[in-house]
Amino acid sequence: MRISASTAVASGTIVALAVVPPITNALQEPFYLGLFLRLMILAIAAISLNLILGFGNMVSFGHAAYMGIGAYVVGIGTFHAIEDGIDWLANGFLHVPLAIAASSLAALVIGAISIRTRGVYFIMITLAFGQMLYFIGVGLEVYGADDGLSLYMRSEFGGVLDINDNTQFYYLVLALLLATLYGVKRLIASRFGLVIRGARSNERRLAAVGIPVYRYKLVAFMVAGAICGVAGVLLANRTDFVSPDMMHWTRSGDLIIMVVLGGMGTLFGPLYGAAAFLLVEEFLSGITEHWQIVFGPLLILVVIYARGGIAGVVHALERRRE
Amino acid sequence: MSEPILQLRDLTKRFGGLVATDSVTLDVAEGEVHAVIGPNGAGKTTLVGQISGEIRPDRGQIFFAGQPITRSPVHVRSLLGIARSFQITSVFPGFTVTANVALAVQAHAGHSFRFWTDATRDGTLLAPAAQYLELVGLTGRAGDVAATLSHGEHRQLELAMALATEPKLLLLDEPTAGVGGDESARMVELLRSFKGRFTILLIEHDMDAVFALADRITVLDSGRILASGAPGEIRADPAVRQAYLGDAEA
Ligand SMILES: Nc1ncnc2c1ncn2[C@@H]1O[C@H](COP(=O)(O)OP(=O)(O)O)[C@@H](O)[C@H]1O
Ligand SMILES: [Mg+2]
Image: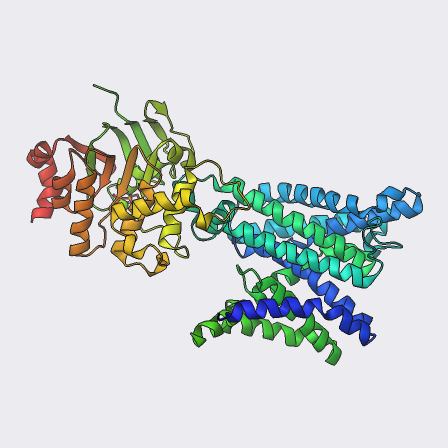
């Protein structure tokens, strides 16, 4: 049996991610373990954005806000666990469902308004809501306002798992990344997924065959928000810190870049995009602090010459071989 | 006689100063092929848009199977049994031909809040989709991506998607528009085979096709009904001859 290039690259990436901890531990390079941890967390967030941006053509420019919501659930919970001795507020089994509930609720409100609009208006409204949440974060005096909040402990998962151990944390995040990929794979092939993908190309036709498009787009928006909220829980624990900056519109822009760079509307694209984004950032920022001057043009080249992003390039190679 | 399946009452639609639909009152009886003809810009597509729900009339009422639907959204009308094909082809270009039709089947098979099962292998969607493709003669292209279809095949796909919603009324907006001779003749043959099985409101430019298919004909001019009746009456109507058929025969 011949294995396609896409499959080979996808499995290669997963295997590579799986062997990171033993390697970084052997080399005593905890920094790189942390880097790949962040990479996977942002990949989960980018995958959630791709669900609406890539498959549904909804260019949400406020997606980082959901990550912030998830992060603040952890930040505020652990803050009160320590300050007020309310131990159960540090429970990760509480943080995750709470982050899902809060971020999907925010997505419900934001989506209910933005999905009625199109194109630039959609982008501007999601951007405005994202910035609104950012400023709410800035206004949270108790929780450090714009300085943010340092976590003095991480989410606790009872006896099941200790994420203070970065290796355990890493494999938890890897498992969640794989679960997200599998869930999205199922979702986009389901009846719901067909409706969302149909809406991307021809909403008018969708309505004409009898589908109330709005409610499906809204639910897709909420699912994406919920997944991103979970990524926020992970990111807060990874950086031991939460701040309004996580919700700033430039963070939302980073997520869009990851999706576009990796390949919109492909399953693995956002993972490749997140990897490329972080590794290029890491590499270039080691050379010059003005790394964005190089990164910007690089992005423009990708958009011009490789419209399908990294996943698109892999796919094209695969077809050339045939 | 039973009640007409579609009733338009005093329907009026303005675009700025232009009256695109001007006090149109019209009945379509169950089972008939009702052709609407008229020169370019007469308001035919605008009329279809108001029946399908994409365009809100400024005045007047629409009744479908006795129910008022004047303010119902597009998808509700589709679920009630109104299907349309578009004058300008409107499909899901990135989907396979089968998936296009399967999505139309899915739309009428309960809600689509099903997140886990693979719909692209769902026999309850694929089997009817295959059947409609067979009906319009597109079986040979079933597995191809819709974007690769010829113009004529696109029109066939449009029709299959409309049929897949099991409509009580088919609104066909120029199904042979821009289609070459052979494919056009096949489409007319196909529509002829639908006679008696479906109620059809047919917008059509080709007069031969209209007189071959229609049980009744309504002539539209500047948004207004100029004449409405059996093909023989329309052919004989002096006002119609002068305004429209005269041009066509000249
Ligand atoms: N959305 C619109 N806005 C403004 N004018 C329109 C619009 N749609 C149609 N019209 C005008 O209404 C008239 C009727 O158009 P249409 O219904 O497309 O005619 P037909 O289908 O008979 O050729 C034309 O003059 C057209 O320019
Ligand atoms: Mg027209």
